[in-house]
Length: 157
Image 1 (cartoon, rainbow, N blue to C red):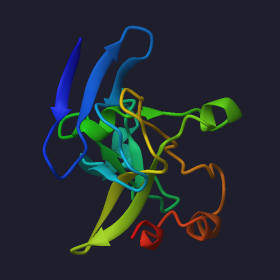
Image 2: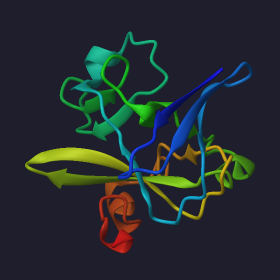
Image 3: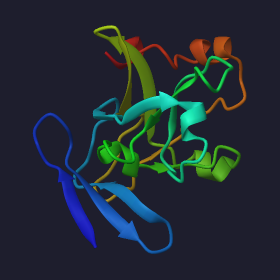
Image 4: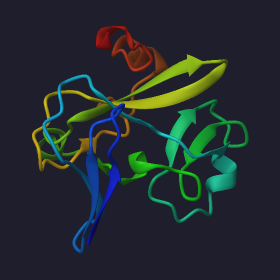
């Protein structure tokens, strides 16, 4: 079964498909150019401590303070959008890393931290959208994340 979820001019048309082997995934309905905005990752902003008992497989770190009572997560379980259905990659596997075709970027808008998803290369119609939740630098220091451009959107414009 599938749903056509996103079909308006600001964003490329995408389709949510349920695959019995992997669950829900998102595919492109037409070719998408490199550096195209796919969606904003949205949901309830809450603390890591609050999500400790969550069964959600779509949680995303927004801000890490080193303290679970003040570190922030985005939980799209009840208020999310199509972004929660994009497939994550196993960033411990080089083969899986090659599937990544979407990147996340954090930025501040109107005093609030936001997360946007952009294509990192051209995506062809019918292709599944995959992204690395950790921007390819899992376990690295905050300075390393900044050097990699994780918080910098200037290379997209």
